[in-house]
Length: 385
Image 1 (cartoon, helix red, strand yellow):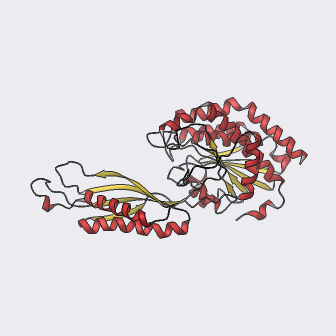
Image 2 (cartoon, rainbow, N blue to C red; image 1 turned 120 degrees about the horizontal axis):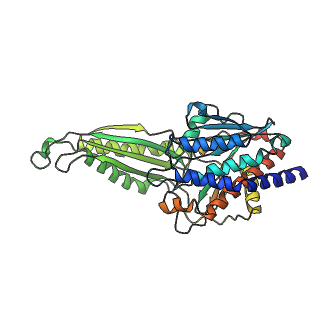
Image 3 (spheres, rainbow, N blue to C red; image 1 turned 90 degrees about the vertical axis):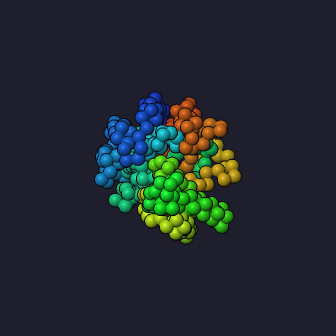
């Protein structure tokens, strides 16, 4: 125990000493937002920082050009720390993945000084395309998480939360094909694909009365015709369905698909539904790891107020799939940004404030300390799901 305490002091000091570089990395990624699987700059910066910290680094790991695999130490206890760095269309880093990446690098930098002494192997996984592309799922399928005794990451949010309530999620592309005609002179000769999409949306809206309280259905129409005087012969949309568990999701998705089928039936349009990415599993945080993390975060002065009603309930992450295989935590770092929540431009602005910079260093330190605690646990490998 005394050695673990000393190791925590070494790690905290090392993270503090690298604080300016870690904050600069967060701001640099924030200033250059890149979409999923296109995070060339961010992945390169993360890889360079880990290389400088002494890690053996592979950029372009697991047949993904913007995935990173970096390892240090040869101990029997193997902990993985995940970094995300993709941004959202139009609103940039409105989910704060710049903070996630910098905190992961910070934790790795601190642990590099003590990994061998603690009997640790530390692996940092740079995971692309969390915002819908499921980078972690692809990496999980390709062996990136094999052999890990624990996996962790931190994520910024409006409110500090030890355990994010992550839902299971399915996403898909919808396309209707109709028949064009002059909308004023011969509308009876057309088949209106835009009407089919409207009917489906109305059906989904009515279905919500009969769905569970934590079910979510939302989407956008990306195209619905090209001119107001032409009966729309095509309509396209992208939709997301969420439920508390994979089992509940498997029940809900076919009901939503039937709403789209109703639009096709009513208008005589042709319908296609295609997956828009892998399904995200519900997040199952490990209670032991959570307890360790929370104690370490509180030691740093972070507090965990109760979530407001419904706060964060509909969120989802591909870390959920990892949590079904490896003991996992995904705590949220509050940024002290009243009135701003994730996926808003105001939250993107909050992700480079002093509170965000503190979150980088606190998140790095809390994860590193938690990793040290994991190294001290007896029979940790027996706790794999």
